[in-house]
Amino acid sequence: MKRLSCVIKGDPVSREYIEREIHKYRLVENGIKIPEEIIEYYIKQNNIYTYHRVIRSNKKEYYISYFEKIISNNDDESIIGSINFFRSHHFCGKYKMIVFNQSAGGDIFYASYGGEDYGKIYFLAMHDGEDVEPVLLANSFGEFIDALEVDPEDMDLLMALPEDKRGDLP
Image (cartoon, rainbow, N blue to C red; front, side, top):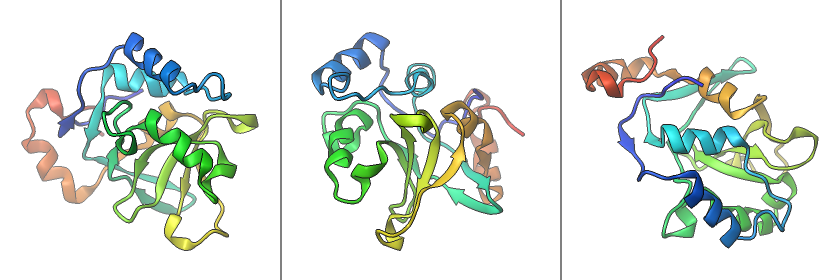
C-alpha cells in the first residue's frame, strides 16, 4: 500500500486500542469484521487529510474529502462508532458498509464488511436518492489507496509540504 501525502494526521492508534473499541461496540458479535488493510492503514499512516484525493474508475473521477478517524470521542466522527448508525439507516443498512471517507458533497466511500464482496471498496452517491446503486471502485482497501492520485490543482500545495509528508509521488 503506498504512502499518502499527509496534511493532517490523526492521533496515534495501536492495534490493542482498535481491538478494545471493536469489542466495546460489539462488532464481532454483530458479524462485522473490519478489513485488515484498513486497520493497518490507521496504525501505520493515519492520514486524515491528504492531497492524494482522486480515484478514476469506470471513466469517471471520484474525489475524496477526508478520511474518517478510526476512533474518536464523538461517534459520528469515527469509523467504528458510525458502523451501527449506517447499519440502522433505512437506505444504507442493506449494504454492510464501513464508511471511511466522504466527498465534499456528502457522498460516501465504504468497505463492505460482509458477504461475497467482503473488503471491496464502493462509492455511494447519497445525494442521488435511494434508488442509486453503489459503484465498485477497488477490490480491496490497499488497491483503493494505491489508485489514489494527486489532484493536479493540488500539486503546488503538495510540493510545498516537507519531503517526509509528501507520500509516494507519481
